[in-house]
Structure formats: structure tokens, C-alpha cells
Image (tube, rainbow, N blue to C red):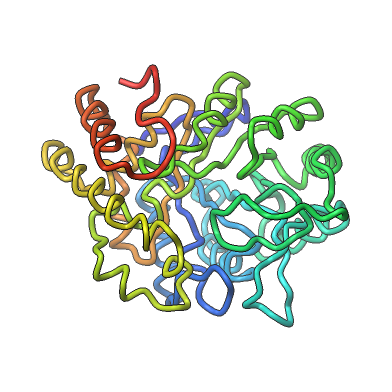
Length: 351
């Protein structure tokens, strides 16, 4: 049985690793990971559940609804006892006539209510266990995955307005818990004055540690944290190489991202530094990378993607892997030596 942890004050006991569906969303949209096979994707989700994973993270925008549909198919025939928690997100609205365009960050109340109904239908569920705001509303497009920058339109919806709508959806029973993804501490504090932030979803990995302040805020406020991209989109999987980065197709969003171009050498050096630790524990490099994230104080669980069932097997043990203080010191030293990424190399009270 996989290790579990309570997600903030929600009462949900989640496994420390959850299945992320962004990677299986297919091609034909702006932030695709390239072509995928739907049958393999559904098999990967079902294998993760059969292996003990009890939550799935998805979003309306992944594959422009396709990822939610796949998750719905994967869980449709499971008994109530077998069904995992389903977490999804709203706020990235795409142009049906131009699917390759960057989605816009929109959280207008009417738009959110339309999105939640669409997500419920695609997922085939009566209630979403955790509903999250994908990005702060700017009224403008999201230029590339992982970018929190961008101009704010005069038509942007104020956080106080869209967080109230999220609280209303929870009160109405359409969603069980509400969360914020990619929001900073000031935004979290503003939201908390309106309704408790049940969970946050920041990016967090040994490469991208920039959300450490948000994680600390969550720990101090009874808020759960589910970290995304703990392997930095595959860079810390132990299987990524410079050759593979060079061969990424133009339909794979990573091909143009700095982590896979100008920052690639330092990132791969950091991945190599995890290999001796993995060997000592008899686990994969991927599991060490994920376990490092889970060792960070305040983090409840990590979202990990997989295209196939065999890829699930490569990271499933991360939640049960306990890194030692010496391991954490070694990883912290490697982060400093390689200069990979941004943020603190080690939590003050980690290890």
C-alpha cells in the first residue's frame, strides 16, 4: 500500500504520488507533448490506480478537453471503492476555431460556471473532488507553459471575484474542495480572507524551487500542496539526454523552452548527480527526484505524468522513499554546484 498524507484540512487522504494527465492529452494544441495513443494512455491511468495511486490531476485545457475525456473513460467502470479522487482546473479558455493559439487566462464567473459543467460532463462525475484556478486571471493569453508573466488586461477579473465563485461552487456541492495553482503569496493571502484555500498547486522540483515561499505559506495556513513537474517535465527522470532534447518535435512545447535549450546542460548535470543516490537506495533517478520534492516541508503530494504503464512503474515507489539527511545535503550541494534552476537549494528544516 502506497504512503498517504492528508491534503490540508480537506479530509482527503491522498497517496504521495498522483497521476498527471497533461502528458497524455495528445497533439493539436499549443502546449502538447506530441502524439499519444489513447488506448495506452487509458491503460497507464488504470495501471496507476491498480498500483495504489488514489488521485488523478487533470485540467480542462489539457488537449482542449481531451485529457478529461480520457480520465473519464479510464475510471468509468470502476466501483465507488476503486475510483480515485479527481482534481481538475479552470481558467484557461481556448479558441475552438484556432486550437493552436495560446489559451486565454479568463476567470469570469459565467465562464467558470460553464467550465465546471463541461468538466463534470467530460469526466463523467457528479462532483469534482478538488477544483482549482489554473492561473491568475489576466484576460490575456498564456504565452507558454510555466510562464507566469504577461500583461493584465483592463477586462481581467479580480481575484476576489473569481475566488468567491469558487467558494460558491463548493457551497453548492459541485466541487468538494477548492485550490489555486500558480498564485503567489500575496494572492493566496487575499483569497484566504474570502474562503479557505484548501490546496495550492505550484511547480516544484530540484530545478524549479521558486515556489518555496508559497509552500511555506500553505504549511502555515493548513493548506495542502500538490506539486507539479517534480521531474521538471522529464529532465530529472534519468532517461533524458541532450540528444533527446535536440530531437523533440515542434509539436512538443518543450522544444522551445529554456529548460531544454539554454539551461539544458546544467539541468542534465543535476540529474546525473542523483544517480549515485538512486544506486544506494536501489531505486530509479526519477524516484529520487520526486522523493526530494516530497521531503520538502509542507508538500502533501506530487503530480507525475506517464504515457504508458511501464513509465508508471518507474516512479510509483517515490512516495515510500525516505531520503536521508545526507542524501538531501548531497542534492543541495549538487544544486549549488551545477547552478541549475532557481530557488533555495534546501529547506531550512529539511533533513
